[in-house]
Length: 49
Image: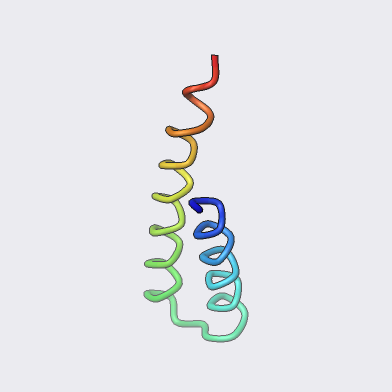
């Protein structure tokens, strides 16, 4: 589920960069993506022992 959200947000970010050129919107998407990636990392990578 979290991976799906990350992939969809990556697509949205790429589209924003290529098509829209609105820096503020692109930045907000990027920050949201960073948060999801950090959450994924905390839940999946750091718990592996």
